[in-house]
Image 1: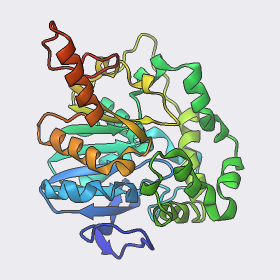
Image 2 (image 1 turned 60 degrees about the vertical axis):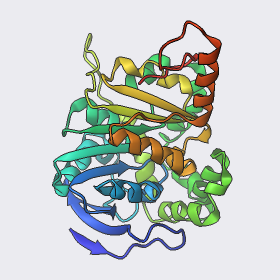
Image 3 (image 1 turned 90 degrees about the vertical axis):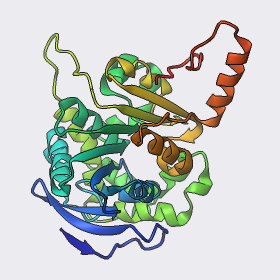
Length: 336
């Protein structure tokens, strides 16, 4: 494990965050680290992001006594970039996370993940690849819950997954003007554009503009469909025993809120918090409330609701003489 000077050319981040290279699963991973606690919090990014997407969470986790790691997943940044589609099959991705956890050498591990990182994290927890003390998922549904809730509306939102299967085309279109469409993606899909100024989206554009980077990023989607494990007839999804928090930005252009419904059937200890008027990029667009929720959860404290939910709960409680539960009586899951 060796330290290196971070190559973040423009966008600011906490000065306590350092970048280092970690050997795991036969690859080299570029890892942003904050803190040197005796517990590990490992944060997995999504498409088309990087470790930089966790810049708001790493210092908070370090303050809580964690060694907080945000690796660039295989194919991203300066991490190893295997060339073939099969290199991005799920088993390899699970082995990457296991290797990183082993390299950290901590007994207590919290896994935090968003987008593609969350796709990996769900599978990691289901397969019990390594023991986890907590699991935090941002804006990706449990795979079985999503399958059951899949609809025409979700199919329309998922068009890009099928588009990415066409060899070379996604790379050509996303790579135009030195990967400018990657920068535009954040501005076009977020709600609060002030959270994605030019210096922030430029980090992601530069990452995507590296030779071979876009092919690696898209290969995740190609491998997902080509090397998908088919469940045996009658086989049930394993129940996740790790305490799990899901944080969901409601204005997600890629995933419907309905795909979160029923997740409690597949997780023993589950709670979900919805953030209205927040997009798919939840931990970057609403870092303060996301951090408050994560902090409460890892400290075994009640996870706060977004303010709008608290106001709604109060109004419903005052309007109902018979409602005595502490749970909000609203027409959506509010599991705690």
